[in-house]
Amino acid sequence: MNDTPILPDEDPVSMPSMPTMRGGDPATLGRIDHYDLLRKLGGGGFGVVYLARDSVSGVEVALKTLHPLLKHNAEEMDLLREKFRLVHGLTHPNIAKALVLHLVREINVWDEAARRELKLSPGDSVMVMDYAPGVTLSKWRRQFPDGVVPLDLALEVGRQVAAALDYAHSERIVHRDVKPGNIMVETGMPPSAASQVSGLMSQEGPATCDMGRATRIRVRILDFGLAAEIRSSMSRVSTESGDTSGTRPYMAPEQWLGRKQDGRTDQYALACVFYELLSGAPPFAGVFETGDPAIMMATVESREPDSVESLDSPRNAALLKGLAKKPDDRFESCG
Image (tube, rainbow, N blue to C red; front, side):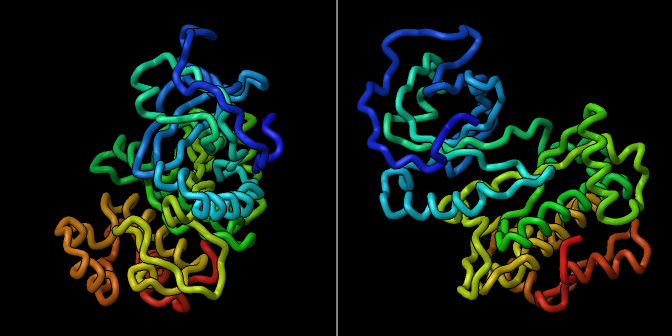
């Protein structure tokens, strides 16, 4: 990328936020500095995400806006910069990298819908991330009957996610919101990418699934670049108590109780994801449909998940260990 420094501290240039003339590639939605907007990728409570192309390098990236309550709060922006410094250094084949926190100077968006959604003004910051092609794990698994993924492919998804999480945990960073919607699956990879995934797996021990199928997918975790103030989904591991943020069906008991969270919290969420791939739904799915937080929390704290019918006893035991109520009763690592 060509944005330097990562956390700019120069004063923003005063320029009009509304376009005065159309320019650039007519196939694009507009331009933010040297980023050409190509199409919307998604959105949520934190803002919107657009696929963009760096016109200098030609590289496609994901450009994410910030929630207005955050970007107009100086103290919260300072916290965001601090968290961004932590995650910017994460470099792993299965993590969508946080590239730059970009200070917006010039905005020329001619697509009306994009202009309304972006709500950008000069001086705002946007996060520029690796673009992870493919579909979310939520959508990918729906191609299989009843949304149940064959064991060899489910193992491969789990292995790649676990490798990324263990790496991040070794850097003292916890994700806190591991879920199918935050996991991208790329299929039909070129040979070079397949070799990269295969090489990563060979470093971690022998594979137990059909490599002919497994190396056709690459999994990447999203949202390591979003600050705890936006999604409360990652932070440096410390002795401080955590919070109850996360996505309910994948939250560990300690998240519900607002206690300290570490790599074993992500491990619980990964076990929930793996359970869903093999059974079609996460543990206690019916309880989460009630919408009653008290019932949900009581269930997660006290009730044991049902075994997965397609797994033998040793594998069910391993899965249930990852879903243990107490962090100390789980595995030492996600791998």
